[in-house]
Image (cartoon, rainbow over all chains, first blue to last red; front, side, top):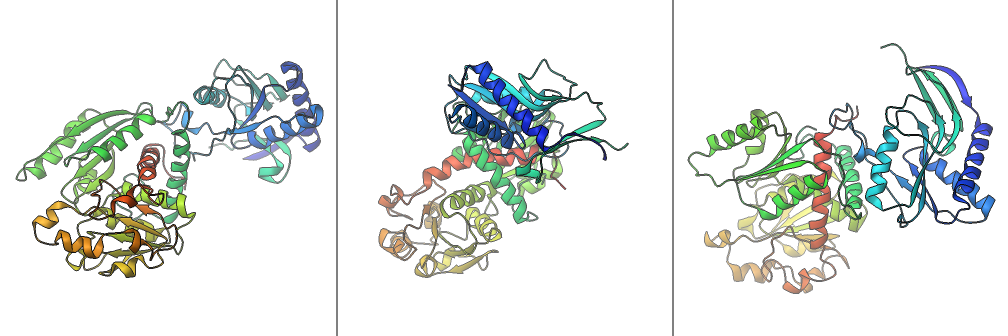
Length: 181
Length: 302
């Protein structure tokens, strides 16, 4: 893969997540009954950061859970390499909650679809929102995000890499070009 | 790995990755909806040439929890035509489009042969005295839950070691995971050697300072053939509260079931806090879900 451009730096990421946190409070009219669920892998630290900002802004703790969607993927019958199944940990009752699903990139919408199905099996939330750091377009399903850090028009030959301090050692969003096969 | 026949050719990392998946499956079994769509579109056949309600039920439940379709084939075969009927049965199922076969047979080696007859994944559900890998996996999983790690842990297996595929598979697997496996039983029920295990006719030697104790079922037919006398077995090899005192305090107790209370195990111990028997049954479903996922979905990461 060939590096093309930096889409966001650490400061821009922080501002975008701050704004998303504010928008969540606004949409939900406070943080009452709110819960955040990070989708593996990079959605988890992003959800934790949003929870931290919500605590700073509103002075209230919002519960955070983690969700692995592997067992809900729609391509397991034809997949090349077996994906590792990771832990789903939601240490609170989802029923009646307003849940914000958090992921790094929204692309085809298939991960979000899988996450919605998984959540339905885990409880009955009152409302589900979707928050993503980057929306890169090319949806294959009728899915949209409620909160977006940055909209980036991309080509299908490109790859958006979100790096987060907790996983990758730095905060940065990059655009890469797939090499010709 | 395409098949699960025994643990030959399995690395420690592969086994640990499978047990990691089983941990997630265990959590799935505690959800309000105890089912995931992962194996939608796959068909699993349980093919039991030797009856076993428990193992078959556990596999079928595992497959259903993963949303696979399940067909079940149980057959008693005459000893003369066995070779032929195993193959014919599997070819018939093959024509129906099966993705994975769970095979239980009284003759050792049938699951191995099956890998040449059909295209699907073969899971050994127990063959003769040879191997019962999913039992060993659920035992390993249960031991890991109780002990944290198996590295350097002393595990005692007590009973009819000679005829036990459970002992054989556990010796193979638990030693691969770093445990020190000791097998004890009457000299007439001990093999010459057992890969992965130390053998001893002394129950005391096996139990001494053991971190966990696994008790095997004493099959009635062993007594009929005069290999062992019941009173003598009970007197010398029954795992009792008093004898368990030789093991480490709180060392957990496992049994693959079905249990002969007051034969291989003092009846009250089976219901004691030390007994992980129910946990073994629950973990069996999770481990089998993980096996199906690992054999059916994609290929291993390079």
